Length: 272
Picture 1: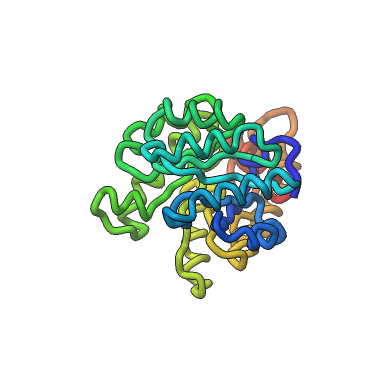
Picture 2: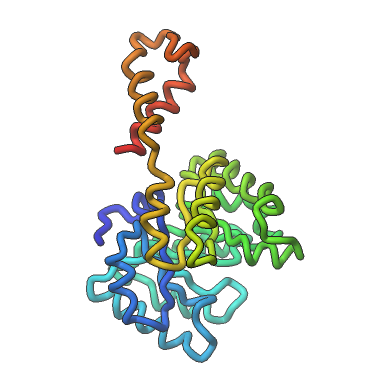
């Protein structure tokens, strides 16, 4: 897995696969899973007494040819600065994922000190209130949604209907800031393919373009979900081929103007 342009890799990734930082034997397996981006987790997946070892393992793997994003500890933790200092100038660092992202200040610090793009993980009411400022912070390459922690912070249910407003807010903020579609939260039901497919379909419908994953077997399902189906691709080709000179035309009985053409072109790009 190689990335010539780390920011481009972050912005085009469809699958972001977590791997616990205290299980370095799994790093290579995660990289070989086909996931667009591996995320070595130094935060939730690692107990307090394993943090130092996990950080050292991540730095060692990234320094000998591995490529990954690293989810560091949140800005309220004393380990926030320790993580950033350890990751600074590590050659294989593609990006930093900042949990509990709720202020431009901490995001700027993460980007500057790590020297890498930042994925802002929105997990709190404070983060949601400041989401437009967060999305437009220099160094932030993408937004992601930690819906389980967000629901906990609000005292709300983590189900789809309860989280719909929050998800839509991430999509809106991403678009307004010129970022790609955001990354949806994890599906924890590892053996329920229908649940994963349902979550992916809903996320795609409202504008998400990627998903956080917790197991390699979720990768191919995720890629298939974000790939335009054959019918959509055929429609997009008919639209693209019908437009000449920028004039509105009819395709399949519907008017094709500039926004419709732009949608067709986006479908063809995603199909490629």
